[in-house]
Length: 430
Ligand SMILES: NC(=O)c1ccc[n+]([C@@H]2O[C@H](COP(=O)([O-])OP(=O)(O)OC[C@H]3O[C@@H](n4cnc5c(N)ncnc54)[C@H](OP(=O)(O)O)[C@@H]3O)[C@@H](O)[C@H]2O)c1
Image (tube, rainbow, N blue to C red):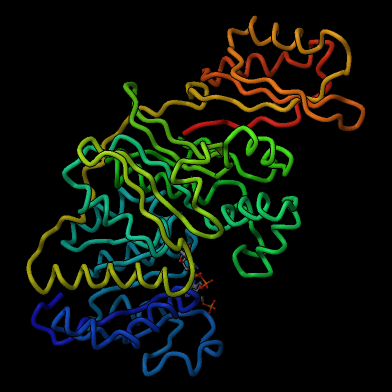
């Protein structure tokens, strides 16, 4: 990139929610950007599949369906990939890097899967790839770990990284509705995709925790290393019972440095209602981390949306422009993300909330407590609830136990002649 140019020239690949957000920010904040940068930012070319859809929106930028109009254009300094998905975005990014273009992407799946390849390719070509918008939408979380917390060893990261599922969990609790009803409302309001599988299953948050593990913990893990479980089995009844016990349920993505390596997982987690993550409502995201010097901190904001996500993409563009215009700081290249052992879910240690349907007979509770005792699992709280479908409902909160130990008990629980069904199991505590 020529540092003497009077403007930074962009090529956008994709012009949907995020692409239009970037375009709008360039239009609205051009004066402010120019003051800060000493250069204007100019969108020269936009690549889409269907030009007709975008006529009248590009405001002077050239619309094309040929990505080479961007990648081969010597005028274009920064390629912004906002189409999503693995293919053809992977090819577009690698070609752009090979053509010595700086790349900005919002694509969590691609960064999670191909980070090492991109970082190395960027280094070989003396450029860089930025991906602030890939985690936490408008929240500047990547920059916080790369710059703000850079004097720390980050020990753990706990994130509410998916706005759709947080919106659903909030409404389940506050409006006392069941999952399917709230999902429909989220779709009507535009917070959930028409196909919400990646969000609801926890996969979207799993990609994001792979990225945060690289950026915050400096450890290289793969998506297959991450145990993930979604929120589709969560019932209103359990959210209410956990509330009575002092907990809120959130879909937590976590990465924790352990003596043996790292543990990374995504699952619905009951967290104490006074914990800062419990206060994160609706479509908001938050990342709560612990650094060995800074201690605990939390960053909170909008995890999606055209302008918040556009704001994150734009901040990467400005960051690149600052580096190029002033000097090569190179702080962004993440080539040193180390291999690590990844602990399986069996090694996880947590409390469990369990709801059982129990035969309504004398001595039933005693038989259950004996089963837990025989499995070496301490019960912290056991409460008999109202009857449902002819069975007593019993809620149990265990002490912290290895997941493997709990699963062994779960596999044999129905062998006790008093337990009719295991209706819910939710992990408790971060
Ligand atoms: N939306 C958010 O709030 C948000 C938040 C964080 C991160 N992200 C990430 O940002 C990226 C973009 O998301 P989005 O919501 O903006 O998507 P979107 O609204 O569906 O827009 C996608 C755009 O990419 C274009 N496109 C798709 N395939 C293409 C191809 N092969 N060649 C050229 N153009 C192509 C589409 O053009 P046509 O209409 O012509 O097909 C459309 O303009 C994704 O990686 C997403 O995960 C989004």
